[in-house]
Amino acid sequence: MVWRMRDCLIVARTVLAVAEPYGDCLTHADGHYERWEAWQALRATGLRSAGLPAENGVSE
Image (cartoon, rainbow, N blue to C red; front, side):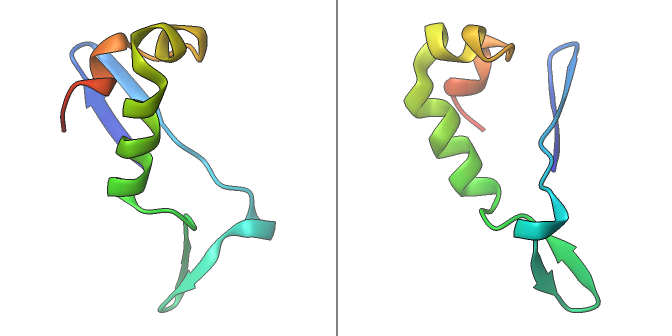
């Protein structure tokens, strides 16, 4: 999954061992909405600690 936040490009990766089939492709086990919820739960301090922009936790 890829997001753009202001001037940052955020890439979330999944290792093949935990990827789920999606037609002829593989995808993340969690979806876009679940990823945003997890980032929101981190709040600004947790996001910064993870190397993510603090704005991620505000809204989609």
